[in-house]
Length: 503
Image (cartoon, rainbow, N blue to C red; front, side):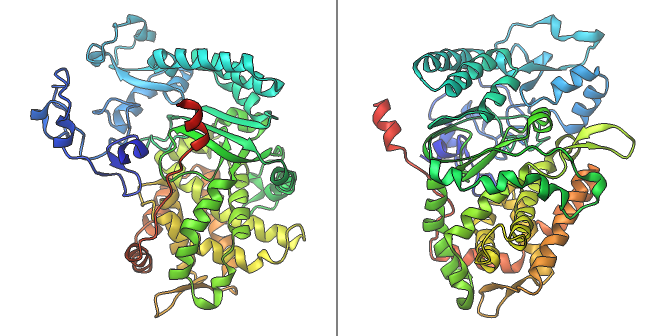
């Protein structure tokens, strides 16, 4: 069961610690898996898991390092460089092509290059799977009555075979249907080598029309928030596009949806679409409610000072979740480097991008809530509860581990706010918010992260994460306390409606 949750033999909630032993992998002998690879254990069993999770997942050759990739891409044309760093390609070796049962294709040796590496589109690498999915999506598209859902399903089916997801992602952003569908390669968390490659996921839900209507405030004010961000005006965009927000009740998910279970997502990540059309958000309300009830409430009971305990509430937790997703759509994305080159934050920060982007969305989300309260656009009842609910949420996210982007980003924020005395650690091992200092501390961290992103400053990002992304004593005390009283780290949803349909 835990293997199915993780989609691998490494626990994503335990900093990718291997939970299956070498002997476990010998249950089924695979005679063809006999080639030893550096770092792999137990070749005598013929099939074995690496003790350490490969940082490049299966997107790159296991023996390729960053330097080899950089040397290869430096010699490519601009178009080929884009292919190499694309969301939707896998990097392979010509010398290993026969091991993977591929027929060698000399056309990969383009531009006179004799380099061993080459890129191959997802549509080719995963062709048997995507052909089947494409066929099913076309059949589904023929069955539905909603014009926008029909358009989405057919365009996504075409994208799986063409490897061009632009039109289908526009169709997803414009979806206006009671049945809400998200499917395709989106998030890049699994590629911890560069953060370039996207994994496939699917979410099916029913639109909560009433809750969706209540959220127009956030999408209507994105440009206002952008213009008031705590960073130099030269880095601000003047053409932020309002992000559609859809609240859904989740019925089913699959693919790269292992822990931590997401409570919301802001897509697409393709910078071309973000620049041209902005992003759209989907909030999974029933997942949020489950996490608050099963995890955040017990955390608050154990870790939050008694006098502030009543300030932890679902409204604050859910509102910050929405604002977090909104804030993925503002701030730097496409940037101009000091030498005048155009680039993106993702390309410049590489493997550090995901953690810093999650921290940005979190901390700028707090800044944005405070801004909207001061503009009388949100109720003043959130003024204190949003900070205390956020503090409780810090312990929830850090428990995902410091190898996971959300956990890493949360540790950065918690330790920064603790250092600035915005969070207070009491002798009785509980925590509280110092309301006199928290606003300034939130703004200073927001400014620091936004400026690093705007400059594409990987060194600055590395130094910031090295200093603050650590398991400090207060964090250890809190996490040990939660472990001792058996507060779950995450939830594993079950889907009775989907199960009844599939049986």
